[in-house]
Length: 423
RNA sequence: GUGGACAUAGCUCAACGGUUAGAGCACCGGUCUGUGGCACCGGGGGCUGUGGGUUCAAAUCCCAUUGUCCACCCCA
Image (cartoon, rainbow, N blue to C red; front, side, top):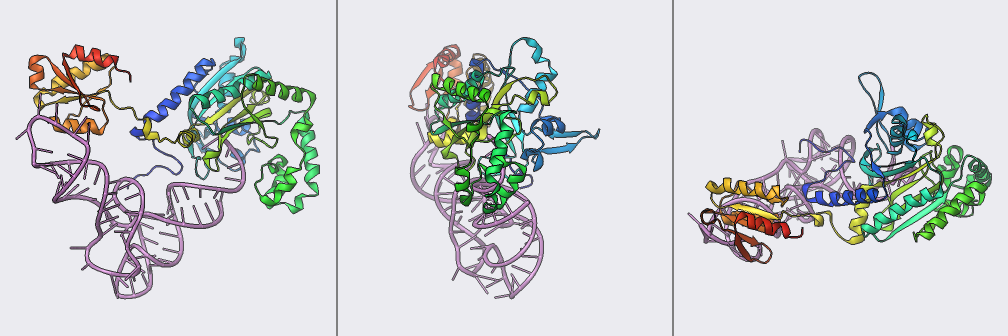
């Protein structure tokens, strides 16, 4: 094979196309019902937007997981590793703060991270994200989480859990970090090497260490929830109340920490046990400091991002289906019997398509047998015979390919019938 | 960045170091020139991922490399 796709990328072949389209449509539908406008921002941005936005100490930046290159004008450009920074840049650059109401935006598109691929992790992957900028109410957090719940419900995905936590704010987080550090100070010697490093760089990270020997220490470590300042405590309890009110099932995970630096207060993740080690399908939270960080006024905001590939895996695992099962066959296959009747078939196809009837033909065949074989192969619902007889009598045979029943009529009549067939 | 497993036809997989690397499915043709799915018969398809090495002889053993899958780190 001469050319292969890049490591960590993947193709969507025609047979899987409808599966992704269906998932996307559903997301768009839900976003619409929540009145989040679909926005678009470039895949390419100045690298600085992300180093600043995502956080200098985040792994995306530290571990060089961003695809960065220099363009011909010696500008440092990055392939976006996530959507929030770009969405906030869009918010600021377009003056959305001035419109008198909160910006509710969603987006769908590819993100890039130079990591080693594994199950559910790609170098180019797609995210659906939603951002609610300009409102610090706990109700916003609730709405975003509910949006996730709606989505999973509509997709009939069982086996998912919603985890929430609060990681405090500028006021209470530092105090908690101190507490945590003090707690681990005399234990870190007995813990794993990674934790030793984390102790210096980011104590919070120790909490999601999976090392068995570290478990006991972590399990009895102080949790942020016990150290929230009154305002954050109030915010979190409002979020919980809001979720309960809407009957959104959630679990509190006191050790839920997010990887990006910009989060504060509410953070949440939606996970599936059916997914293997990359079990987080969707994740988000509040990021009240990011807008200012990126040069705007102090503006509260919250959002989430959902990985389409992981969502797809969850659909397949939870519903025991395959992507190819979503294939939508052509409604009618036009079989030109004899090459000389091909132009008539094209006319018929044109007529049908104008009425919104999906119609196909294979121009390389001219025998009815070949046509039916090919119609069968593509699972067409009906086949229309277009031969000398039919044209002469203006009476065409429409064959139902699943039960073999046949009806006849002129093209208008056939079109009328096909229009009434539910897709 | 680290570790493990794997790499043979379009797909799923066989083949003890020893003839011309096989099977099922798929594809093409025929039985069947206006009726698909079924059946039978026939056919095309491979530098065994790539590059080295060991050997009289390598798909098979060794090294390297690339890729895939899985896991770590971390994350959607």
